[in-house]
Length: 314
Image (cartoon, rainbow, N blue to C red; front, top):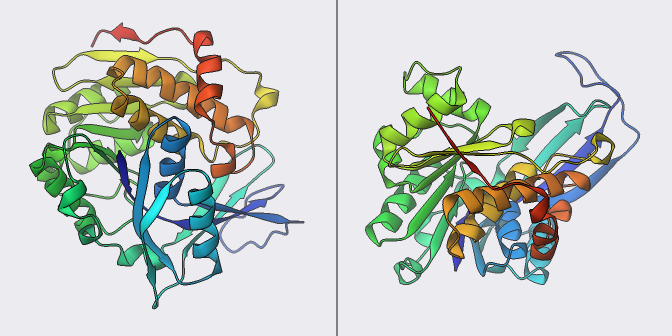
């Protein structure tokens, strides 16, 4: 089973001709509401990629919270670990996107900030399970759960997004770190690594620092991975016509959830990287985050179109 300790939000998607600058008001004709939050998105992505998944987190005791958990349950995600807050509403995110696809986002954390690592009992922290986390819950709770999981022999995956500072020692309890190129640079800067302009070198430095496997997603350039024993892999992206790209909101979460499901299913890192890359591209072909996440059959149908990951020299 994959345990996801993560955020639960309702996303408001707004389409604009142009994004506002400071002090400017712009008008939009409409908006859409979608269930979201990195935790919920990645839980659903992993479930659709074939894994048995339990989400642990906190929502408000409100209509948004109930709607999100019911949607997840109907898609096979176990939500008994989602608690309800009486003090804060369900988290909410406003995502504005212009005609060129550029976007701005504001996330109101709400009940997510009440989530506790104690919601994950020791009984499910067993070697057969995998823990997938992000950085939209309190840092102290995230780090504590990582440490508990590592002590029980659980495989841990952290999508360090947003790139919030975590204690340096916490890197040592992460098995797989997933970041995009911007997040990798932010982390490298905070750790004074001096390799902020080379994605492969950043991945290598982080892998050495935490003795962990590091994956850096590079948008249209695909993704790279450096293992804790200093082997490097690269994979491209699924080739699609640019006219097919609708919305990239869920691409990163599709990548992370599918990667976790693939590792848990026993695939090696290069193949997990390849499957995650296909899922990330497919998530760009539909509107929204959760609504765009691909199913296992969709991923496997397009997998032959993407060549296997290749070994990369430093």
